[in-house]
Image 1: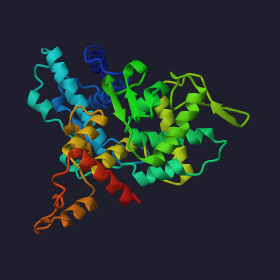
Image 2: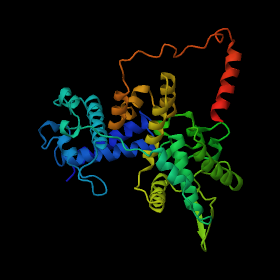
Image 3: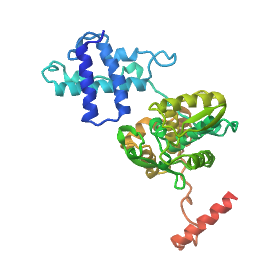
Image 4: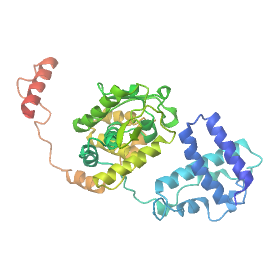
Length: 364
């Protein structure tokens, strides 16, 4: 049974996150989900005296069942739940010093996922090959909903947007001419923590073709304030774009529709967020300079490059092997990076023209 005092403390903390920290509705829902595990763990014991509760909170979290038949909750989810608990305890000790005076700060700081659960976790992501199959699979012309879902798969990969932001994206925020997306809360886009940024699409022509076809359709039939991932009406077997406002759980509807697309194509389902992972991995694998790396990080709307590095930089084992095998003690080509005799006197404009000619010949 949940202790009522613990429940009221949780509600006060959520109010603080809402009114003072100004968290978005989506972020508050995630914190609510995490904190429910905390008060269930405490049961009838007071959260002001958590050090004597057994099992310990990290052990309790690691034993939580996973989704869809998985034995245990994922390591990533364990970390989020425990981080939410640490934030709660620090807030509670500061806000109610008398009530939480016996709670040691070192105990709060020591909260972390169990070490045995922190093995090497290979990130799952949608590969370019996979999204190509999803986006270019032959769909019957009458099935407008599946065609929309194909465009969604392509756009999620190209943009790296979070599912909630994508599901609330209005047509006016999309500019395919400059391959840009205005992830602006004032346009109705629900970004994480209300962040505002103009982001850009990866330059992958085949996927862009799918996106452009759907973009043209919605622009011709709907108002610019309508959702890019528009609702579909089905009347007597005929599908058409709906002008009705979609429901609040549009991101969940997107997930369900992608599950249908995966089943139709014959692939194992991956969540909308795995397309974001795919976008990041593709970008980082093609980055050649630190400026490229920084651009990928900013395009994901990360607060700093460290976040990008921690989440996406770990390589797959086979990629590590290939790169290590490429290391050699042989001296570099003495001519590498040098221009042939006579080219050193060319101006920058002349060199640029020469590079364009060379590119045309190589592509031919």
